[in-house]
Image (cartoon, rainbow, N blue to C red; front, side, top):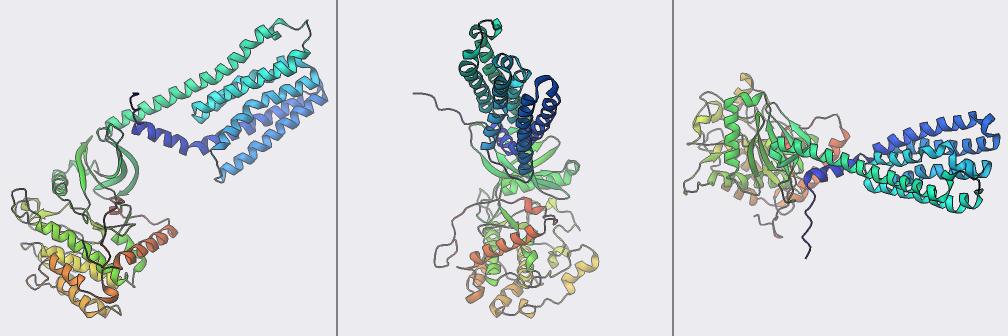
Amino acid sequence: MKPSRAPPSASKKLLRDQIEKDAPLRELSVATFMSGITAVCALLALGLMPYIGAKLSLALGIFLITLTVYYLLLRMGLKRGWYRPAVRWVNVAIEVSAPAVIFLVDARSKGVEYALTAPPLVIWGTLVALSGLRSNRALAIGAGGIAAAEYLLLYLFVAMPRLSPEALITLQPALFVPRVVLLFCSGLVTAVFVDHLNRRAEEALSAVRERDLLGKYVLHERIGAGGMAEVFRATYSPEGGFEKTVAIKKVLPAIAMDDSFVELFRAEADLCSRLNHANIVQVFDFGRFKDTYFLAMEYVEGLTLQRLMRPYLATGLPLSAVTFVGAEVCQALDYLHRRRAPDGKPMNLIHRDVNPSNLLVSLLGDVKLTDFGIARATTSRAALTQVGVVRGKPGYFSPEQLESQTIDSRVDLFTLGITLWEMIVGQPMFPSTADEASLSLVHTQSLSPPSMSRRGVPPELDRIVMGLLERDVNKRTPTADLALKQLLALTGAAAPYPSGQAELVRAIAFARGEHEKRLDQVPDASLAITAATDKVRNPPGGKPR
């Protein structure tokens, strides 16, 4: 029984993918080179007319000019985005067959002995080596095989029957065979050289990976950046061929010198590693990268709620999509607030930063709460919050946060109320600035129900939102579970199930389409921590998980 062949390493696969992705550019380079060299050769052939005769000169000139036109047209097509993988084989065949055509022209005009000793045959091996620019060993071997076969056939059926007995000994069959063998070997040598370069590139990539995140992650494009961290789409690729797309959140090197922020980052990793809920972005790994730190987390392909809301300014999202998001977030918050330690004691966790930039929506309509960087337990982790320091996003503070009072899980419900109000109305409730005048509006601004700004909002939804927005914490909706039950009791166009997720998916598609129209728009940094995840949804009948 043959042992199973090990799957290609992530580095090799990444290199192959990059070579394939770069193929049109390499073909463009070859087309540019060939159009130039054939044009020069055409001028030389015409310039040698007094020496080789008008007939041969014109024949060679026409053939070379035809090649020049072909490569110029190919170059134009490649620059406009036209490319097919088969074009590589077509071009290799044309390149290594050009000397064969010239041989036939020379043999017809000047005889086979002239054709066998003419200068164009010198470049046959060079044209075979040119195939190595495609970084494909099969193309290199194929080029050598085509050239050797054509040379052998030309000799056997065109040259040898017409050779005179007095022909040079170097043109006799015994000494001609090594020429054919060497021509084929030029393809083999080119293939070996291509393999060598690819192997060295793979080794270099592997060496980089060993230094980059301990070799477990292959970083791809950067998908977001903020003042504290940057996020990359990455492939988790340990030994054995297993791969998974993740998001890597790296602390910026300058911020990594701040011990207090590093402590918060460690705390985020520690907390999130204990959370496992369908509506919470999962963290898989935490580690040190050179002079900084990183988190590996779930990658959700989609948008932040903040970006989703941009095309809906002044109109608001569909009501069922709003209540669906609210119900999903309530489930995440209920899980977080009820979370217990391994010993069974309540952990008293609160998020403290529930806002549209920290809510992710996937292309399938999944809703996920992320960014637990300032989440804390109301008891054991109080040391992470300095007295008088308000942590969170301006525009999404609760009154008790601003007053530096003791806070509990109800602080998350107030910021959820702000988020729901903004989703319905399509406008910010409070200015998103941290100056004293703006922050004071949390205490002084009149909080009107959403129906005052948007028609069609049912009174039941008004009551839910305003219950979450009670400034007096003792009058506020006390738990996420109760808020969830209130949302589930809604009927008609505002009911979260069963049509809310479908409405959300349509809104996401519309928002993505609008974003494509504005390519100059810079995406949110928090958008980076996103990624596609399939999960079992609500069964028919509208009952939530």
